[in-house]
Image 1 (cartoon, rainbow, N blue to C red):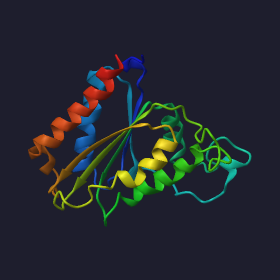
Image 2 (tube, one colour; image 1 turned 90 degrees about the horizontal axis):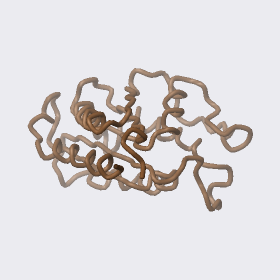
Image 3 (tube, one colour; image 1 turned 135 degrees about the vertical axis):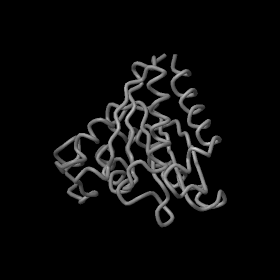
Image 4 (tube, one colour; image 1 turned 180 degrees about the horizontal axis):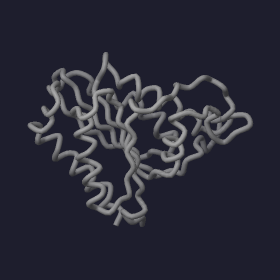
Length: 198
């Protein structure tokens, strides 16, 4: 069984507002990961210059990685090594932020050529964990299925274990600190992932 020291964790901050509620939730998770002994790396996507997928298709023809070289290149390299991927985003216009969606689109490069019919679809090893941290100003009954819309693709990439932490009714920076349920669920998710790996 893999130890927490081998559970490399990459966190992508999708919010353009630094220090907001999704950032704070991500910081909480990363702190818990580090307490369990996992190595972590965090990228604030709003601070990087990169494009979404440009349909170069080189990742399916002559390369085993994305054909674009830009600010997302080291992020994609880090994700290939990550046993735990943390995606943190507020809900913007019914979905994740544009910054995070652009990055997710580039994950297309992780699929092998002929992935649609291939038995093994991903260049990434299986058994990885996806942690989806979602904050929203709207009430609980909205956007509860947002992670589910990405689930099939991420499972196809080898992220077999999915963990969702949601906080609703949080708009202003710091509102998340009053949402003890979401903070405790963040701790519980980290415990399931890292203590379970010991």
